[in-house]
Image (tube, rainbow, N blue to C red; front, side):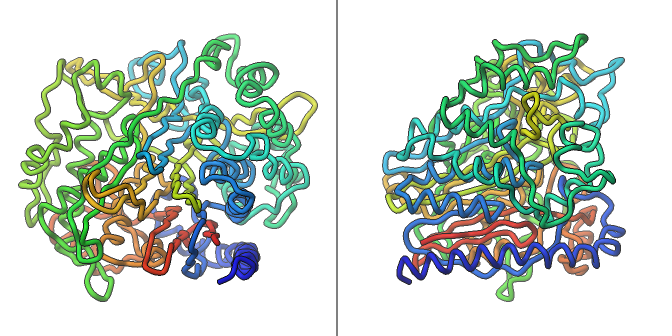
Length: 614
């Protein structure tokens, strides 16, 4: 296609996405009553409908995000000569406005950037402030229930997204910083149509209306959220975008906006955040954690997955799972694209082992170092070969962490709920690829909307510190690596990946895939399954539409996607000893994959994401 035809095609896809919202909303109203009765426990954000998504091809530059307006903002930046990083920054600012339940300036993120010089990871995870301590979520020695912890001041980590986006721009941006906030500022000022997903998120989060500022912005006088299609203006967000665009991160971490943030968290009884905490935000940059994957018929040169190291646990877990899988030389899909049941069983067992290691050994990298835990030791060929021997024909009675020596005894973290997030990926015509997953944790975070006096609206604060273990030690006094401590970052499931062709650095640095998803602790399963399906040659859009299986803890029931997974799969897994739970598995996968025809994109039909490209 010529560029003009691609432009018209992109506009057409955007229009179809808007139309799909109204159809999805209608479908939700017809189907939700019957479907939700079967689902015992929904994912972080309940379903807002299933929509048909056509496969998307492009040649030079493209983007996938969780919302049509964010994807269009990114594509506009690419067409203006911006880098993939520039486009991603513009898209994230828009997402904070139009998908505020999932991510925004008040949260954190992990990003991976691939260039001709290598693959770097940027850690924008929220930090615990100086006032943090391991007993923050204990009352009378017992952990708080999640809802109780979520609304505490102690749940709020120092937001890092603004600092992360600035660091990304300093390293890889081409257009002026001020250009990148303009789309979000414009939509916040003129208003944007409320989507079915945002409308449904407001319906599912009654605590949101308890916030006076939020009630004025998102709800009618009757107390009901504004309907789908209502044009929502957010002047507070427009004001923030203008300030950050003109003055950079200082506008967020100092002055009036910093004071507004602290005022929404601190109380006379709890002084949780200080100006020093906000000024001390850092965004560590490091080489990405990479792992070679064995050749497959679809990828005979093999692949190398690259993603953020801890405190992200996703890259490590996916690397372990697929390497264990390769030791067994199993197959995930049959020729008719149904699950190969023996292969699926072994994939679940590999996931359980990876989660057992994750719960024992992964947390803030400074704490891991203090305890003598080296991420690389969990990926050595010898270690994984011994772990692979545990993958038998039936479910292990207990999936236990591997025997890794530490400088002091450590305890496994108890199972704990995890929520939220949004994913976006961009490639540009100069070979830069960037993948980022961002989050405020629970839908609408901890229910705190931050804004300036006399201006309506603003942005939502995170409750990310609930990703720390509420129980800091076991009954024997052995510490949990992922316990809250001042200055530390909680373990995360976020798994933004860039995948390179070839297994070793000598094979070159050609990115051939980028992928990620929201979904709390199920993110790891979504990404691992998707990557394996891509390794077996399934096209990107078909991958996003396949039924889900999720492992969320080493010894918990296996989650199967309600209404999409055949009952025969459940029966076959139960015959191998797996307890089963049916769930609404509302992933938000975003995939970009290189093919002989150029690039192919995949956007999850369970959400509102759109792939656009030239």
